[in-house]
Image (cartoon, rainbow, N blue to C red; front, side):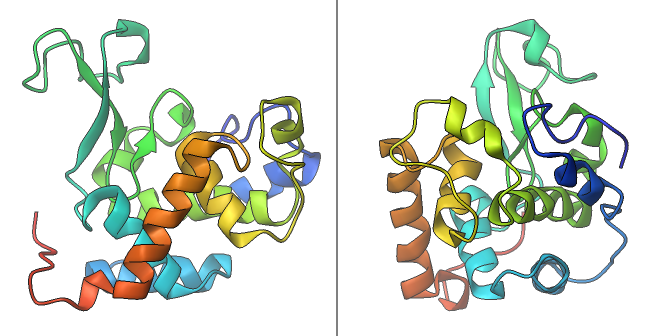
Length: 190
């Protein structure tokens, strides 16, 4: 993974994680999610629940539709993906946002393994305390290392324990309690 994945406001250690991102794994969706969980040191059940919240385990999922052309990735101009005047900004099983993760394009959209590898490298950076920029943004409390759920919420909200982040955390925790990926109506195809 090239430079530019981690923001300039991260501590220097964050950039060292980028060299570990390669998306080099093949397998079923469940196997890929397990691989990323193991690689980045997070509970596989949390990964399963978050992937369910983001896409219902569908790498083909598109989201965060917007009308600003500068946030559209190459090949996805306004209207190109079926919504007139809009383009998706988030891609894949973990809904990686193109405007913030351009260094991972196009692999974050085409490879489930790369999508989760990038997402959980960012989670690891957050968990290890490298995302010091979070204390310069509106937040619900001071950012600190070691907060698994705070880093899950940061993925969704781009902020630390804000109302939006905490609502997302609750939704992922609900899926975790329900173990939705084990329910008979949970459809992994897509």
